[in-house]
Length: 125
Image (tube, rainbow, N blue to C red; front, top):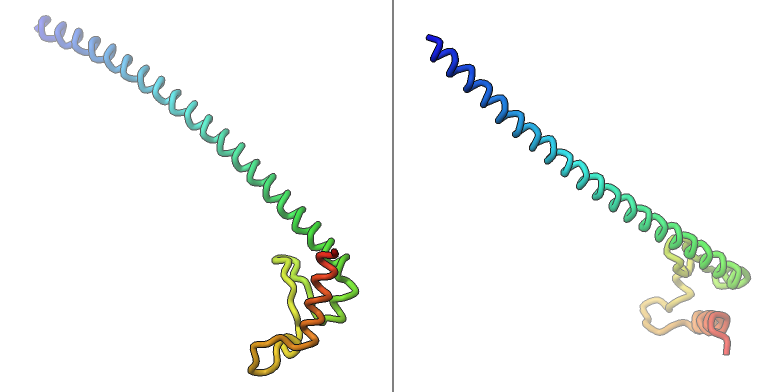
């Protein structure tokens, strides 16, 4: 009987040492994954900050361009019956009848004058 109990006791001791080694390896592996995840999070945060800086700079440039366009064309926009879209910085003419004659593909004389005036203001010689 002692041989059986003694054998079982030694077997339990050997199994516990085995599981201690495995648990130490698992703890070490968990630390490796922890450090990898921290490194990846840090690089993601740095990338996010760079993207945020670019977005802020883009928005600042767009506002500056809009303000410059408004300063340059503030007197002409009412005369041309036009507006500048703040989001896309596009010129929009509010009166479609000023652009083209009905059913025609040629510009009207008044719109040719507006375009000539626009390009002279935009690109002086």
